[in-house]
Length: 583
Image 1: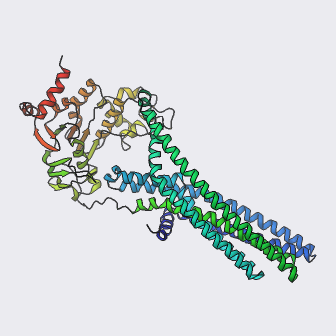
Image 2: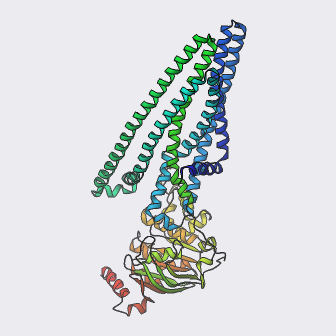
Image 3: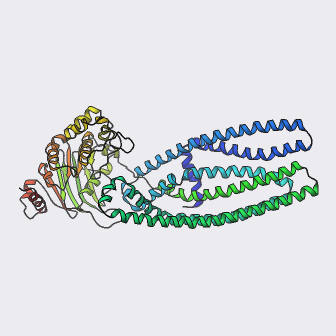
């Protein structure tokens, strides 16, 4: 990404996110510039009045200066306070836009290491480095300093053009030093990013509360902590090296400034003595030169922040540039009568290994289907394809004999309700975890249907209990089996034609599992249902069983018929598991 394109694109992005911030920031910059120029002029005017023995005018001048300074100070405080408020608002809006962008990307990107690292880098820049504020603040400070430098430069030029030459030489030397300093910082940034990604992973892992039990029982914590320390030491080494380099450049910049000011004082002093210029002119010129030098120092610091922020904001712009997932279909899906896989093959992005290899099958309305197979056979991949999280590499998926791509995405997704293996519960009420769109009575009914109602009824706040202690000490922590039942209730709460349960009872005891399977067909009513489970008992309640073996379909028939094939994979899976339950 070209450097010259980064700033205008970011400013446009930030301006569209929150326009008020920019107006407040411009007001703040204007007030700062006025304060700088006012201070430089008024002191010399006051000295001039005293020099000419205009004491009454001097007193009036003091009152005037005091009043204006107070007004400017108040304006400065007000604009800074407003700036802080709108800075937070803008950062939250940008975080929201980032979240919306991530949710609009193809799902495959969320499982791709490159984009996972890109997302981390964006979050580091926005939240840890304060890129949004730093870049906008630097941009407006540069504008403010340019305005101040123009006014101060005019004062200095009218006194003696040679002063401008001296200051220009100092500016040139500072620019060279700043560029060298920035090269060092940019190199540091690019070298640190991949290390910081790994450092962040180990830090997040060792502080995650969900890992507490495993860390107490096994030795992996020591290994992870050693790796975390190793990366922490690498990061610390990078920062130490950077700080030493930056200290060297800052020392040279300060040295240039002091030498420059020494020449300014000497030249102004000699010129005042030789020409007999007034003390007020001397004061105005020296004051302007000091303010000019301060502005240059500020510009150097701001420019350093600005260039560093440009690097930090590049991942954000790269993320926003990624083409969003497009759904061209216009057909409204009102019901699901059939699902067909027509010679579908699939390989995950960036791999050539086929997870599904030329599979063809059809599921009809009201059917209850079980998908079984060994680990890695492709069972969950079938679910991801039906949910349009991925597109087939080859072949077509048809709903009601129409390719899924022709359907409107929103209406399509409204027809599917899924419980994934890695389902998520959220730190909201149990009722809202089941569904935000139903009332408490309906949530209660579903909870009892699925066998978790009595447990919830005993809680102090019942269905209004927060399902986490993350931010509410009155929140509740339920067992894995209980939360899994709530996840199933959530699937039932959605008025969808297709129910997909991917390992829906992995956390349940055998009795609870049997109760759910015995009752689930009744709960599913006239919906099409697909079950994926390693517990073969679930297959007995299904109309047909789809057997996946190494990405291919080896059988698709009823339980009774499949058990007649004593050499089949299904027979081996079922009988092997059944032996473990035999008395």
